[in-house]
Length: 87
Image 1: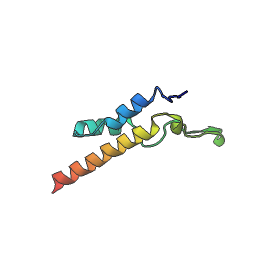
Image 2: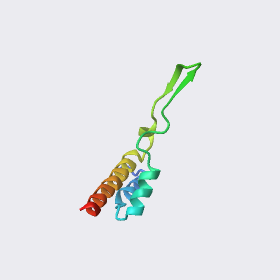
Image 3: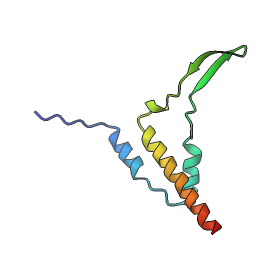
Image 4: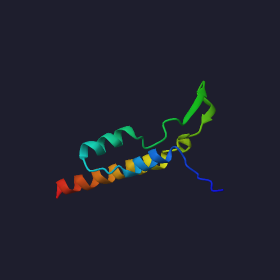
C-alpha cells in the first residue's frame, strides 16, 4: 500500500514561490503589505511594569517562508532599480 502525503497548502506555497517581481509598483506593494517584523509580538504592561509578553507567532504561519522570500525579492528589485536610475 502506497501512502501519498498530499498537503492541501502545497498549491498555495507553490503559487507564492512562482511569483516573480518585475515591476516597481508591484515591489512597492509587496513591501508595504508584507511586514518586516512580526506584528503580533506584544508586551503587556500594567502601571508601567511588564506583566506578560506575547511572543512572535509568525513562524506558525504555514506561508511564512514564502512571504519572507517574496518580500526579500521585492526589496532586491527595488534596490537594483534605484541604483540603475542613479547611474
